Length: 230
Image 1 (cartoon, helix red, strand yellow):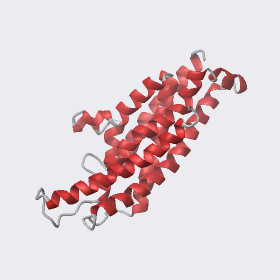
Image 2: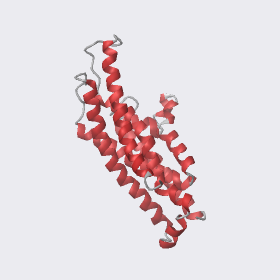
Image 3: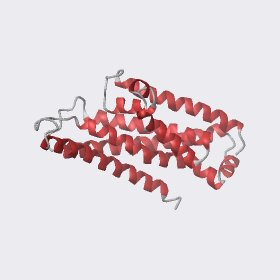
């Protein structure tokens, strides 16, 4: 079951993004039918994609945490460290695997989610303000950094449940904070970056915020990973 879990998480990520993006697009169209807004109103497809991507990050975090917490739960981390005693190399390799996986999965769900949003809006999609390929790259970058963040949390916390809880709080839960605070968390910065919003700061700053969180977590993880017993 452990072997199938990462695959199920990745499939769940794709499905969750597609379902959420489609639902949000359909809700906007039906809102016009119900008089909630003018019948000819339009919405950027990326506004449906953004929330969908953040829901997808929940299941993707479950995949990313398994890259390291599964070794703690089975005790195989000891064998790994016997085979490669340089602990920083071990941690870096796991973060790199997560980063690459994030790029691939992020690009896939970005492209599929954007297409699903466009289809669901049924002609009510506003003209895109940037090339769709750029949006896909944004999502890929977000997922890659999210993977590094979650792998680092896994090295710090070691527990799968604790790591997933911390990852979900940082990647989604902090949206519940006041907007002026949440935009400086991974969740708020992700929304600003994916939707190319300049409401709080230039959207590229959102990527920088996420990168700083990932780098800080990785620095703490590297220090603890080196000092603690396996």
